[in-house]
Length: 232
Image (cartoon, rainbow, N blue to C red; front, side, top):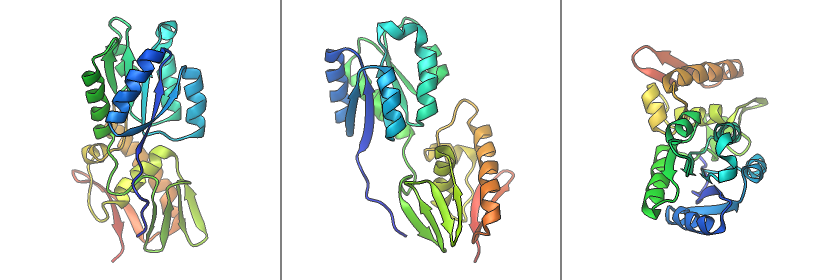
């Protein structure tokens, strides 16, 4: 088995105000992340198209208060990273969280509150036993996390990020049944209907894996969950 070395958390900070940006960047660094800074959501979206991040922190500016939900949706289309919002909009917390934010902090903020929210978001999104970006070799299969491709001989299957992260969780627990709650606890990020999403994505994985004649099968049992069962 070959795994990549652990790399620091990569965080994208979006904040138009220079003073707020400096304070927020300091909190993110205290949480152990490398900070990449940008001033507007438009610039952030272009950055997300080029680079993968482990965390996104958005200080919502007054000029986009009416477009929060739209921008959150655009961010979610480009990244599965936890999203922490720092927002001055009155009564906006419920709307932002329902739209896809993971944590919400009032602006102006107490640094300890922001730091706590960042750490909570990172804990919730903790990776499983091997990195999602690792290169893993097992029973002749090669899982290339950089390209999100599974290979066996000349056969290959490519995965979306969400499919890949579920695959890695299952590979990390061979011959062991995981329920939907276990999958979510191990770092697989889903929306409000998490258990249903796990079921849907397991079915998508099975469709891609079955034609490859792998040394394992993706099986499910009522009451137990899902298991990547390897041949003895």
